[in-house]
Length: 421
View (cartoon, rainbow, N blue to C red):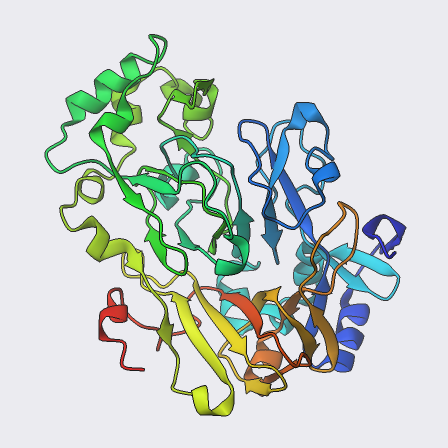
């Protein structure tokens, strides 16, 4: 069995190794699984991680409830390992982080536009998988996060059927506040932090989560994700503030409310409440402005495959990330071109990607290498990638996410209502 720990870590510049691998594969870099624990949550057990490895980081670190894809973003966990949250590139019997590859190769990997503007791969995606709901929380905006030397975090959700054979304990997500909620009511919830349940969910509305659908969530909007396993393309940041103090009887410490706020404001309840975008939280058309269902890219069913937009729309006028779901029928090869670089994960089936193996495993050990995840360069995406389903019976399904402003022709919010295919 091949493991990440058996690979030799590359020291120094990776440029020559990356370029040689891209020539060999047609623009692909194979990635190893990147597992992330959360000390305050209970794993949902749908990541295909072996049950014996759920606490591979140690019980004190919490269970592994996330797998990050094509990530150059460190996980903001206490007592984290030095490389926690960073994806590793696998080349032969060697490894190095995708972060280092992007640093060394720049536009060769992510394209000139993204490299010139950000000097990094500024997005990532993950599977987020919990047994129950998590606290009502928000992610700071760009301006708010800058106050503590961080970046803001818009995010999106898609609930893949392949990872949701069960809904677990609470497949509902509270989002925002009921229209008419006042800041004074929210202020009182925060003031009641040490008096038992602070009651902030009493001011919110829960939406039933639908497998095969999703949401786009702006910064500064409160949300308490439910128990479906979620594919989450998002900005490359791990900032948040937890506004709920008890979840299923488990305490949420004050430190997780204020961890990404200036220290001088850690006891300033008015400042904490004002971190929320009020208009967006009490929006009477919240679902219309945030709910997503897949939209086909084109009518290609007669060709044996379907490519669908699963994340689209803009945040404050900017397209920060998008995502697609490709389904290839048994025995079919789909040749797919895209505008920019992307990270992909195969969630069902087996076959080839540009003659490289592409397989969705049934069960993964913590240090085991897989053949289900790749990073595709901008040049590789624009030249086209072949996806061949070698099965005679099972579809092959691939999720892939893109960086900012890569897909100007992506649908607008609400486009699913006009789906003509």
